[in-house]
Image (cartoon, rainbow, N blue to C red; front, side, top):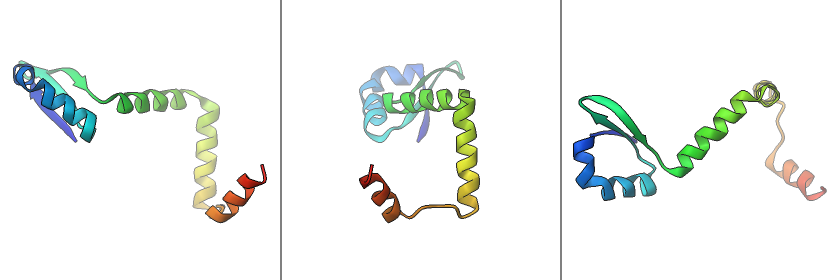
Length: 90
């Protein structure tokens, strides 16, 4: 969940905010005079964003994703059981 809190409100609430970010994966926008100045997210969220950016910058990865999506929409899929058998034989 994305929450907004002022910098003044954050100071006494920092332990609670940190816990909410850590345990509930909440996201906080910290404002000062009504303007956003800081975004607080969990390390897992941050890593996920960085990975997404890296994938979006990789043209060959994007092409494979688009092709896989087309295949899935066309019904060209493999059952979980068939996939497990393939992986066992590797």
